Image (tube, rainbow over all chains, first blue to last red; front, side, top):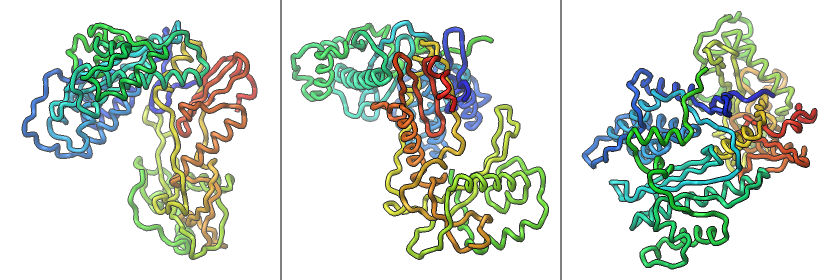
Length: 286
Length: 248
Protein backbone atom coordinates (compact mmCIF):
# COMPACT_ATOMS: atom_id res chain seq x y z
CA UNK A 1 0.00 0.00 0.00
CA UNK A 2 1.54 3.29 -1.07
CA UNK A 3 0.58 6.90 -1.47
CA UNK A 4 -1.12 7.53 -4.79
CA UNK A 5 1.00 9.13 -7.49
CA UNK A 6 -0.10 7.41 -10.70
CA UNK A 7 -3.65 6.09 -11.02
CA UNK A 8 -5.45 5.15 -14.26
CA UNK A 9 -2.78 6.99 -16.24
CA UNK A 10 -3.31 10.13 -14.15
CA UNK A 11 -0.37 11.70 -12.36
CA UNK A 12 -1.28 12.90 -8.87
CA UNK A 13 0.95 15.65 -7.51
CA UNK A 14 0.76 17.53 -4.20
CA UNK A 15 0.67 21.32 -4.34
CA UNK A 16 0.63 23.95 -1.63
CA UNK A 17 -3.14 24.26 -2.08
CA UNK A 18 -4.11 20.63 -2.56
CA UNK A 19 -3.62 18.15 -5.38
CA UNK A 20 -3.01 18.41 -9.08
CA UNK A 21 -4.35 15.71 -11.41
CA UNK A 22 -2.48 15.62 -14.69
CA UNK A 23 -2.37 13.42 -17.78
CA UNK A 24 0.93 14.79 -19.03
CA UNK A 25 2.46 11.52 -20.18
CA UNK A 26 -0.84 10.41 -21.73
CA UNK A 27 -1.10 13.70 -23.65
CA UNK A 28 2.47 13.39 -24.95
CA UNK A 29 1.76 9.78 -25.96
CA UNK A 30 -1.25 10.92 -28.02
CA UNK A 31 0.80 13.71 -29.64
CA UNK A 32 3.64 11.31 -30.48
CA UNK A 33 1.20 8.78 -31.89
CA UNK A 34 -0.50 11.45 -34.02
CA UNK A 35 2.90 12.73 -35.21
CA UNK A 36 2.08 16.18 -33.77
CA UNK A 37 4.82 16.44 -31.16
CA UNK A 38 6.61 19.26 -32.97
CA UNK A 39 3.52 21.20 -34.12
CA UNK A 40 2.95 24.89 -33.49
CA UNK A 41 0.83 25.44 -30.35
CA UNK A 42 -2.39 27.48 -30.37
CA UNK A 43 -4.19 29.14 -27.47
CA UNK A 44 -7.65 27.64 -27.76
CA UNK A 45 -8.86 24.16 -28.75
CA UNK A 46 -11.52 25.16 -31.28
CA UNK A 47 -11.94 27.91 -33.83
CA UNK A 48 -14.81 30.37 -33.41
CA UNK A 49 -15.46 30.77 -37.14
CA UNK A 50 -18.71 29.15 -38.18
CA UNK A 51 -18.30 26.03 -40.26
CA UNK A 52 -19.93 26.26 -43.67
CA UNK A 53 -21.32 23.28 -45.51
CA UNK A 54 -19.05 22.68 -48.47
CA UNK A 55 -18.44 19.54 -50.43
CA UNK A 56 -15.92 17.83 -48.21
CA UNK A 57 -14.05 14.63 -49.10
CA UNK A 58 -14.06 11.81 -46.57
CA UNK A 59 -10.89 11.59 -44.46
CA UNK A 60 -8.64 8.90 -45.91
CA UNK A 61 -7.96 7.05 -42.65
CA UNK A 62 -11.18 6.91 -40.64
CA UNK A 63 -9.74 4.34 -38.21
CA UNK A 64 -6.91 6.66 -37.25
CA UNK A 65 -9.41 9.50 -36.74
CA UNK A 66 -11.49 7.32 -34.42
CA UNK A 67 -8.47 6.10 -32.47
CA UNK A 68 -7.15 9.58 -31.81
CA UNK A 69 -10.54 11.06 -30.96
CA UNK A 70 -11.21 8.07 -28.69
CA UNK A 71 -7.92 8.72 -26.92
CA UNK A 72 -8.86 12.40 -26.53
CA UNK A 73 -12.13 11.43 -24.85
CA UNK A 74 -10.25 9.92 -21.91
CA UNK A 75 -8.21 13.11 -21.62
CA UNK A 76 -11.37 14.98 -20.57
CA UNK A 77 -10.96 13.23 -17.18
CA UNK A 78 -8.66 16.06 -16.10
CA UNK A 79 -9.28 18.54 -18.93
CA UNK A 80 -12.75 20.15 -18.90
CA UNK A 81 -11.32 22.86 -21.17
CA UNK A 82 -11.25 20.51 -24.20
CA UNK A 83 -14.56 18.81 -23.41
CA UNK A 84 -16.59 20.88 -25.89
CA UNK A 85 -14.09 20.52 -28.74
CA UNK A 86 -13.70 16.76 -28.21
CA UNK A 87 -17.45 16.28 -28.11
CA UNK A 88 -17.74 18.22 -31.38
CA UNK A 89 -15.33 15.91 -33.25
CA UNK A 90 -16.94 12.84 -31.65
CA UNK A 91 -20.12 13.69 -33.55
CA UNK A 92 -18.39 12.77 -36.82
CA UNK A 93 -16.90 9.43 -35.80
CA UNK A 94 -19.04 7.49 -38.30
CA UNK A 95 -17.89 9.43 -41.37
CA UNK A 96 -15.03 11.85 -40.69
CA UNK A 97 -14.08 14.29 -43.46
CA UNK A 98 -10.90 16.26 -44.13
CA UNK A 99 -12.28 19.36 -42.42
CA UNK A 100 -13.13 17.32 -39.31
CA UNK A 101 -9.53 16.17 -39.22
CA UNK A 102 -8.46 19.84 -39.27
CA UNK A 103 -10.58 20.36 -36.13
CA UNK A 104 -8.86 17.38 -34.45
CA UNK A 105 -5.44 18.78 -35.35
CA UNK A 106 -6.42 22.10 -33.80
CA UNK A 107 -7.20 20.32 -30.51
CA UNK A 108 -3.82 18.55 -30.69
CA UNK A 109 -2.05 21.86 -31.33
CA UNK A 110 -3.79 23.34 -28.30
CA UNK A 111 -2.68 20.34 -26.24
CA UNK A 112 0.90 20.73 -27.46
CA UNK A 113 1.00 24.09 -25.68
CA UNK A 114 -0.82 22.91 -22.55
CA UNK A 115 0.26 19.26 -22.20
CA UNK A 116 1.45 19.74 -18.63
CA UNK A 117 -1.76 21.47 -17.49
CA UNK A 118 -3.97 19.61 -15.06
CA UNK A 119 -7.00 19.85 -12.84
CA UNK A 120 -6.20 21.59 -9.58
CA UNK A 121 -8.16 20.21 -6.64
CA UNK A 122 -8.04 22.69 -3.77
CA UNK A 123 -9.28 22.63 -0.21
CA UNK A 124 -12.98 23.34 0.15
CA UNK A 125 -14.25 25.44 3.01
CA UNK A 126 -17.87 24.37 2.63
CA UNK A 127 -19.23 21.12 1.25
CA UNK A 128 -21.77 22.51 -1.19
CA UNK A 129 -22.67 21.72 -4.76
CA UNK A 130 -23.45 24.31 -7.37
CA UNK A 131 -23.89 23.92 -11.08
CA UNK A 132 -24.00 25.90 -14.29
CA UNK A 133 -25.99 24.95 -17.37
CA UNK A 134 -25.95 26.53 -20.78
CA UNK A 135 -27.05 25.83 -24.32
CA UNK A 136 -26.21 27.10 -27.78
CA UNK A 137 -29.45 27.12 -29.70
CA UNK A 138 -29.55 25.49 -33.16
CA UNK A 139 -25.76 25.46 -33.30
CA UNK A 140 -25.44 22.43 -35.53
CA UNK A 141 -25.49 23.64 -39.13
CA UNK A 142 -26.37 20.19 -40.44
CA UNK A 143 -29.55 19.48 -38.48
CA UNK A 144 -30.21 22.59 -36.38
CA UNK A 145 -29.98 20.73 -33.08
CA UNK A 146 -28.67 22.66 -30.09
CA UNK A 147 -25.61 21.95 -27.97
CA UNK A 148 -26.07 21.79 -24.23
CA UNK A 149 -23.56 21.60 -21.43
CA UNK A 150 -23.26 21.63 -17.68
CA UNK A 151 -20.56 22.02 -15.09
CA UNK A 152 -20.92 21.10 -11.42
CA UNK A 153 -18.66 22.40 -8.68
CA UNK A 154 -18.03 20.96 -5.23
CA UNK A 155 -17.24 24.23 -3.50
CA UNK A 156 -14.33 25.56 -5.61
CA UNK A 157 -13.47 22.36 -7.48
CA UNK A 158 -15.18 21.32 -10.71
CA UNK A 159 -16.12 17.64 -10.36
CA UNK A 160 -18.54 16.91 -13.18
CA UNK A 161 -19.02 18.31 -16.66
CA UNK A 162 -20.55 17.42 -19.97
CA UNK A 163 -21.07 18.84 -23.41
CA UNK A 164 -23.42 17.19 -25.86
CA UNK A 165 -25.59 17.80 -28.87
CA UNK A 166 -29.21 17.62 -27.82
CA UNK A 167 -31.20 14.73 -29.19
CA UNK A 168 -34.16 16.73 -30.46
CA UNK A 169 -34.51 20.07 -32.22
CA UNK A 170 -35.49 22.90 -29.90
CA UNK A 171 -38.00 25.45 -31.20
CA UNK A 172 -36.64 28.28 -29.08
CA UNK A 173 -33.46 29.13 -27.20
CA UNK A 174 -35.43 28.89 -23.96
CA UNK A 175 -36.37 25.33 -24.81
CA UNK A 176 -32.72 24.44 -25.53
CA UNK A 177 -31.66 26.06 -22.26
CA UNK A 178 -34.41 24.22 -20.45
CA UNK A 179 -33.23 20.85 -21.75
CA UNK A 180 -29.68 21.65 -20.64
CA UNK A 181 -31.09 22.68 -17.27
CA UNK A 182 -32.89 19.33 -16.95
CA UNK A 183 -29.65 17.45 -17.76
CA UNK A 184 -27.71 19.52 -15.24
CA UNK A 185 -30.42 18.98 -12.61
CA UNK A 186 -30.26 15.21 -13.10
CA UNK A 187 -26.48 15.28 -12.60
CA UNK A 188 -26.70 17.46 -9.48
CA UNK A 189 -29.31 15.13 -8.00
CA UNK A 190 -27.07 12.12 -8.68
CA UNK A 191 -24.16 13.90 -6.98
CA UNK A 192 -26.41 14.67 -4.02
CA UNK A 193 -27.20 10.97 -3.63
CA UNK A 194 -23.48 10.26 -3.89
CA UNK A 195 -22.75 12.75 -1.08
CA UNK A 196 -25.40 11.07 1.06
CA UNK A 197 -23.68 7.70 0.47
CA UNK A 198 -20.35 9.32 1.36
CA UNK A 199 -22.01 10.56 4.58
CA UNK A 200 -21.16 14.18 3.77
CA UNK A 201 -23.83 16.54 5.05
CA UNK A 202 -24.74 19.63 3.06
CA UNK A 203 -26.74 22.45 4.50
CA UNK A 204 -28.57 24.08 1.62
CA UNK A 205 -30.12 22.96 -1.62
CA UNK A 206 -27.64 23.19 -4.55
CA UNK A 207 -27.97 26.25 -6.78
CA UNK A 208 -28.00 25.83 -10.53
CA UNK A 209 -27.08 28.95 -12.47
CA UNK A 210 -28.74 29.48 -15.82
CA UNK A 211 -28.30 32.48 -18.12
CA UNK A 212 -31.71 32.33 -19.76
CA UNK A 213 -34.41 34.27 -17.91
CA UNK A 214 -37.21 32.37 -19.63
CA UNK A 215 -35.84 29.04 -18.43
CA UNK A 216 -35.51 30.25 -14.85
CA UNK A 217 -39.10 31.53 -14.91
CA UNK A 218 -40.41 28.20 -16.18
CA UNK A 219 -38.68 26.32 -13.42
CA UNK A 220 -40.37 28.42 -10.73
CA UNK A 221 -43.67 29.35 -12.27
CA UNK A 222 -46.41 26.76 -12.71
CA UNK A 223 -47.85 28.61 -15.71
CA UNK A 224 -47.81 26.22 -18.61
CA UNK A 225 -46.91 28.05 -21.73
CA UNK A 226 -48.25 27.09 -25.15
CA UNK A 227 -44.80 27.37 -26.68
CA UNK A 228 -43.29 24.86 -24.27
CA UNK A 229 -45.99 22.23 -24.14
CA UNK A 230 -43.78 19.80 -26.07
CA UNK A 231 -41.03 19.96 -23.41
CA UNK A 232 -43.51 18.73 -20.84
CA UNK A 233 -41.43 15.98 -19.21
CA UNK A 234 -38.30 18.08 -18.66
CA UNK A 235 -40.53 20.88 -17.44
CA UNK A 236 -42.20 18.75 -14.81
CA UNK A 237 -38.94 17.09 -13.74
CA UNK A 238 -37.12 20.34 -12.96
CA UNK A 239 -40.21 22.08 -11.55
CA UNK A 240 -40.91 19.18 -9.23
CA UNK A 241 -37.40 19.34 -7.77
CA UNK A 242 -37.59 23.09 -7.34
CA UNK A 243 -40.99 22.82 -5.64
CA UNK A 244 -39.57 20.24 -3.22
CA UNK A 245 -36.72 22.69 -2.51
CA UNK A 246 -34.13 20.08 -3.53
CA UNK A 247 -32.50 22.48 -5.95
CA UNK A 248 -32.62 26.22 -6.62
CA UNK A 249 -32.47 27.77 -10.07
CA UNK A 250 -30.93 31.24 -10.31
CA UNK A 251 -30.23 33.63 -13.12
CA UNK A 252 -26.67 34.61 -13.98
CA UNK A 253 -25.46 36.95 -16.68
CA UNK A 254 -23.89 35.30 -19.72
CA UNK A 255 -20.56 36.90 -18.87
CA UNK A 256 -20.27 34.86 -15.67
CA UNK A 257 -21.83 31.73 -17.08
CA UNK A 258 -19.10 29.11 -16.66
CA UNK A 259 -20.96 26.49 -18.69
CA UNK A 260 -20.51 28.75 -21.74
CA UNK A 261 -17.27 26.94 -22.50
CA UNK A 262 -19.23 23.63 -22.73
CA UNK A 263 -21.77 24.86 -25.25
CA UNK A 264 -19.93 27.04 -27.78
CA UNK A 265 -16.48 27.87 -29.18
CA UNK A 266 -15.01 30.91 -27.44
CA UNK A 267 -12.40 33.45 -28.53
CA UNK A 268 -8.99 33.04 -26.92
CA UNK A 269 -9.28 35.90 -24.40
CA UNK A 270 -12.50 34.69 -22.78
CA UNK A 271 -11.47 31.04 -23.17
CA UNK A 272 -8.30 31.63 -21.14
CA UNK A 273 -10.31 33.41 -18.44
CA UNK A 274 -12.78 30.52 -18.27
CA UNK A 275 -9.96 27.96 -18.10
CA UNK A 276 -8.68 29.64 -14.97
CA UNK A 277 -12.11 29.26 -13.37
CA UNK A 278 -12.25 25.63 -14.48
CA UNK A 279 -9.15 25.14 -12.36
CA UNK A 280 -7.11 23.88 -15.30
CA UNK A 281 -3.71 25.18 -14.27
CA UNK A 282 -0.11 24.83 -15.40
CA UNK A 283 2.01 22.68 -13.06
CA UNK A 284 3.19 24.42 -9.88
CA UNK A 285 6.70 25.77 -10.35
CA UNK A 286 9.16 23.59 -8.49
CA UNK B 1 -5.47 -6.54 -27.24
CA UNK B 2 -6.19 -9.87 -28.87
CA UNK B 3 -4.07 -10.56 -31.88
CA UNK B 4 -5.09 -12.86 -34.64
CA UNK B 5 -2.87 -15.88 -34.64
CA UNK B 6 -2.94 -19.29 -36.18
CA UNK B 7 -4.85 -22.08 -34.49
CA UNK B 8 -3.14 -23.52 -31.43
CA UNK B 9 -1.55 -26.91 -31.93
CA UNK B 10 -3.20 -29.93 -30.39
CA UNK B 11 -2.13 -30.77 -26.87
CA UNK B 12 -0.27 -33.86 -27.99
CA UNK B 13 1.90 -32.24 -30.64
CA UNK B 14 2.81 -29.31 -28.36
CA UNK B 15 4.00 -31.73 -25.73
CA UNK B 16 6.47 -33.28 -28.12
CA UNK B 17 7.53 -29.84 -29.25
CA UNK B 18 8.45 -28.93 -25.67
CA UNK B 19 10.76 -31.83 -25.21
CA UNK B 20 12.64 -30.88 -28.36
CA UNK B 21 13.00 -27.16 -27.55
CA UNK B 22 14.07 -27.90 -24.00
CA UNK B 23 17.38 -29.28 -25.20
CA UNK B 24 18.91 -26.27 -26.97
CA UNK B 25 20.49 -23.41 -25.08
CA UNK B 26 18.62 -20.11 -24.89
CA UNK B 27 19.71 -16.62 -25.88
CA UNK B 28 20.26 -14.44 -22.83
CA UNK B 29 19.19 -11.00 -24.02
CA UNK B 30 15.90 -10.83 -25.91
CA UNK B 31 15.16 -8.13 -28.52
CA UNK B 32 13.42 -4.95 -27.38
CA UNK B 33 10.11 -5.76 -29.10
CA UNK B 34 7.60 -8.20 -27.70
CA UNK B 35 7.34 -11.66 -29.29
CA UNK B 36 3.97 -12.64 -30.72
CA UNK B 37 4.17 -16.40 -30.59
CA UNK B 38 5.48 -18.98 -28.17
CA UNK B 39 8.28 -20.24 -30.42
CA UNK B 40 9.66 -16.70 -30.72
CA UNK B 41 9.62 -16.13 -26.98
CA UNK B 42 10.87 -19.51 -25.88
CA UNK B 43 14.26 -18.93 -27.51
CA UNK B 44 15.09 -16.34 -24.86
CA UNK B 45 15.94 -17.08 -21.28
CA UNK B 46 14.05 -14.06 -19.89
CA UNK B 47 10.76 -15.01 -21.52
CA UNK B 48 11.22 -18.69 -20.78
CA UNK B 49 11.69 -18.17 -17.06
CA UNK B 50 8.83 -15.65 -16.95
CA UNK B 51 6.52 -18.30 -18.43
CA UNK B 52 7.67 -20.83 -15.85
CA UNK B 53 6.92 -18.38 -13.04
CA UNK B 54 3.47 -17.71 -14.42
CA UNK B 55 2.68 -21.43 -14.66
CA UNK B 56 3.87 -21.94 -11.09
CA UNK B 57 1.67 -19.08 -9.88
CA UNK B 58 -1.30 -20.60 -11.69
CA UNK B 59 -0.67 -23.99 -10.08
CA UNK B 60 -0.21 -22.44 -6.63
CA UNK B 61 -3.51 -20.62 -7.11
CA UNK B 62 -5.21 -23.96 -7.99
CA UNK B 63 -6.57 -22.33 -11.11
CA UNK B 64 -7.54 -25.62 -12.75
CA UNK B 65 -7.61 -29.37 -12.42
CA UNK B 66 -7.00 -31.78 -15.28
CA UNK B 67 -10.00 -33.82 -16.39
CA UNK B 68 -10.45 -36.30 -19.26
CA UNK B 69 -11.76 -34.79 -22.47
CA UNK B 70 -15.44 -35.41 -23.11
CA UNK B 71 -16.86 -34.75 -26.61
CA UNK B 72 -19.72 -32.67 -25.17
CA UNK B 73 -17.31 -30.09 -23.71
CA UNK B 74 -16.67 -26.77 -25.42
CA UNK B 75 -12.93 -26.50 -24.95
CA UNK B 76 -11.51 -22.99 -25.31
CA UNK B 77 -7.96 -22.46 -26.46
CA UNK B 78 -5.18 -20.86 -24.51
CA UNK B 79 -2.14 -18.88 -25.48
CA UNK B 80 0.66 -16.76 -24.10
CA UNK B 81 0.87 -12.99 -24.29
CA UNK B 82 4.12 -11.16 -23.74
CA UNK B 83 4.66 -7.64 -22.51
CA UNK B 84 7.83 -5.75 -21.68
CA UNK B 85 7.12 -3.56 -18.66
CA UNK B 86 9.10 -0.34 -18.72
CA UNK B 87 9.74 2.32 -16.13
CA UNK B 88 8.84 5.95 -16.87
CA UNK B 89 12.45 6.55 -18.11
CA UNK B 90 12.09 3.74 -20.67
CA UNK B 91 14.38 1.19 -19.01
CA UNK B 92 13.10 -2.38 -18.76
CA UNK B 93 11.46 -3.27 -15.47
CA UNK B 94 10.49 -6.86 -16.18
CA UNK B 95 9.41 -9.33 -18.80
CA UNK B 96 5.81 -10.15 -18.10
CA UNK B 97 3.91 -13.09 -19.51
CA UNK B 98 0.30 -14.03 -19.09
CA UNK B 99 -1.44 -17.26 -19.80
CA UNK B 100 -4.74 -16.22 -21.34
CA UNK B 101 -7.85 -18.09 -22.39
CA UNK B 102 -9.17 -17.50 -25.88
CA UNK B 103 -12.48 -16.22 -24.56
CA UNK B 104 -13.88 -15.45 -27.99
CA UNK B 105 -14.52 -19.18 -28.47
CA UNK B 106 -16.76 -19.31 -25.39
CA UNK B 107 -20.46 -19.91 -25.95
CA UNK B 108 -23.01 -17.74 -24.21
CA UNK B 109 -25.29 -19.65 -21.82
CA UNK B 110 -22.92 -22.64 -21.67
CA UNK B 111 -19.58 -21.11 -20.71
CA UNK B 112 -20.75 -17.78 -19.37
CA UNK B 113 -23.89 -15.79 -18.62
CA UNK B 114 -23.20 -12.45 -16.92
CA UNK B 115 -20.26 -10.36 -18.12
CA UNK B 116 -21.06 -6.87 -16.84
CA UNK B 117 -18.56 -5.42 -14.42
CA UNK B 118 -18.93 -1.85 -13.17
CA UNK B 119 -16.10 0.68 -13.07
CA UNK B 120 -15.88 3.83 -11.00
CA UNK B 121 -17.39 6.97 -12.50
CA UNK B 122 -15.02 9.84 -13.20
CA UNK B 123 -17.07 12.33 -11.20
CA UNK B 124 -16.88 10.03 -8.16
CA UNK B 125 -13.08 9.93 -8.35
CA UNK B 126 -12.85 13.73 -8.54
CA UNK B 127 -15.39 14.18 -5.73
CA UNK B 128 -13.56 11.77 -3.41
CA UNK B 129 -10.21 13.43 -4.23
CA UNK B 130 -11.76 16.79 -3.41
CA UNK B 131 -13.14 15.54 -0.07
CA UNK B 132 -9.78 13.94 0.81
CA UNK B 133 -7.92 17.19 0.06
CA UNK B 134 -10.37 19.22 2.15
CA UNK B 135 -10.12 16.85 5.10
CA UNK B 136 -6.34 16.53 4.83
CA UNK B 137 -6.54 12.77 4.25
CA UNK B 138 -3.82 10.79 2.54
CA UNK B 139 -4.85 8.84 -0.54
CA UNK B 140 -3.43 5.34 -0.71
CA UNK B 141 -3.15 3.11 -3.73
CA UNK B 142 -3.56 -0.64 -3.41
CA UNK B 143 -2.08 -3.11 -5.83
CA UNK B 144 -3.74 -6.48 -6.32
CA UNK B 145 -1.39 -9.07 -7.76
CA UNK B 146 -2.96 -11.24 -10.49
CA UNK B 147 -6.37 -9.77 -9.63
CA UNK B 148 -8.47 -11.75 -12.10
CA UNK B 149 -7.13 -15.09 -10.87
CA UNK B 150 -9.03 -14.48 -7.63
CA UNK B 151 -12.38 -14.64 -9.39
CA UNK B 152 -14.37 -17.83 -8.89
CA UNK B 153 -16.18 -19.33 -11.87
CA UNK B 154 -19.78 -20.41 -11.50
CA UNK B 155 -19.94 -22.14 -14.89
CA UNK B 156 -17.95 -25.18 -15.98
CA UNK B 157 -15.29 -23.89 -18.35
CA UNK B 158 -12.78 -26.17 -20.01
CA UNK B 159 -9.53 -25.04 -21.58
CA UNK B 160 -6.81 -26.76 -23.56
CA UNK B 161 -3.62 -27.29 -21.61
CA UNK B 162 -1.25 -24.33 -22.01
CA UNK B 163 0.94 -24.60 -25.11
CA UNK B 164 4.24 -26.31 -24.25
CA UNK B 165 3.29 -26.86 -20.60
CA UNK B 166 1.28 -30.02 -21.18
CA UNK B 167 1.24 -32.58 -18.41
CA UNK B 168 3.40 -35.41 -19.76
CA UNK B 169 1.44 -38.11 -17.88
CA UNK B 170 -1.99 -36.87 -18.97
CA UNK B 171 -1.43 -35.20 -22.36
CA UNK B 172 -4.98 -35.74 -23.64
CA UNK B 173 -6.63 -34.17 -20.57
CA UNK B 174 -8.11 -30.68 -20.53
CA UNK B 175 -8.13 -28.04 -17.79
CA UNK B 176 -11.36 -27.62 -15.83
CA UNK B 177 -11.07 -24.01 -14.67
CA UNK B 178 -11.98 -23.13 -11.10
CA UNK B 179 -10.69 -19.57 -11.04
CA UNK B 180 -11.23 -16.97 -13.71
CA UNK B 181 -8.38 -16.61 -16.14
CA UNK B 182 -7.46 -13.48 -18.11
CA UNK B 183 -9.29 -13.55 -21.43
CA UNK B 184 -12.46 -15.28 -20.26
CA UNK B 185 -15.64 -13.37 -20.99
CA UNK B 186 -16.72 -13.43 -17.36
CA UNK B 187 -13.29 -12.73 -15.82
CA UNK B 188 -13.89 -9.05 -14.89
CA UNK B 189 -17.34 -9.87 -13.53
CA UNK B 190 -16.03 -12.82 -11.48
CA UNK B 191 -13.26 -10.62 -10.02
CA UNK B 192 -15.65 -7.80 -9.18
CA UNK B 193 -18.04 -10.24 -7.46
CA UNK B 194 -15.21 -11.76 -5.41
CA UNK B 195 -13.89 -8.35 -4.36
CA UNK B 196 -17.41 -7.09 -3.60
CA UNK B 197 -18.14 -10.14 -1.38
CA UNK B 198 -14.82 -9.72 0.41
CA UNK B 199 -15.32 -5.99 1.08
CA UNK B 200 -18.86 -6.53 2.36
CA UNK B 201 -17.64 -9.36 4.62
CA UNK B 202 -15.10 -7.06 6.33
CA UNK B 203 -17.71 -4.38 6.95
CA UNK B 204 -17.72 -2.11 3.89
CA UNK B 205 -20.99 -0.91 2.35
CA UNK B 206 -21.36 -0.48 -1.40
CA UNK B 207 -22.69 2.86 -2.56
CA UNK B 208 -26.10 2.63 -4.18
CA UNK B 209 -25.40 5.24 -6.84
CA UNK B 210 -21.90 4.15 -7.83
CA UNK B 211 -21.38 0.45 -7.24
CA UNK B 212 -17.59 0.74 -7.49
CA UNK B 213 -17.47 2.94 -4.40
CA UNK B 214 -17.29 1.27 -0.98
CA UNK B 215 -17.69 3.01 2.37
CA UNK B 216 -16.58 1.87 5.81
CA UNK B 217 -17.58 3.82 8.89
CA UNK B 218 -17.16 3.41 12.64
CA UNK B 219 -18.49 6.22 14.81
CA UNK B 220 -17.18 9.49 13.40
CA UNK B 221 -14.45 7.78 11.38
CA UNK B 222 -15.00 6.95 7.76
CA UNK B 223 -13.06 5.66 4.81
CA UNK B 224 -13.76 5.34 1.10
CA UNK B 225 -12.52 2.72 -1.31
CA UNK B 226 -12.68 3.25 -5.07
CA UNK B 227 -12.37 0.29 -7.43
CA UNK B 228 -11.32 0.47 -11.06
CA UNK B 229 -10.90 -3.23 -11.91
CA UNK B 230 -7.60 -3.97 -10.15
CA UNK B 231 -6.63 -0.38 -9.42
CA UNK B 232 -7.86 0.53 -5.96
CA UNK B 233 -7.74 3.81 -4.05
CA UNK B 234 -8.30 4.07 -0.32
CA UNK B 235 -8.74 7.25 1.68
CA UNK B 236 -10.32 8.25 4.96
CA UNK B 237 -9.83 9.57 8.45
CA UNK B 238 -6.25 8.96 9.46
CA UNK B 239 -7.13 7.41 12.82
CA UNK B 240 -9.05 4.67 11.03
CA UNK B 241 -6.48 3.93 8.36
CA UNK B 242 -3.67 3.64 10.91
CA UNK B 243 -5.43 0.74 12.62
CA UNK B 244 -3.68 -2.60 12.11
CA UNK B 245 -6.77 -4.19 10.53
CA UNK B 246 -6.19 -1.97 7.51
CA UNK B 247 -2.63 -3.08 6.83
CA UNK B 248 -3.66 -5.86 4.44
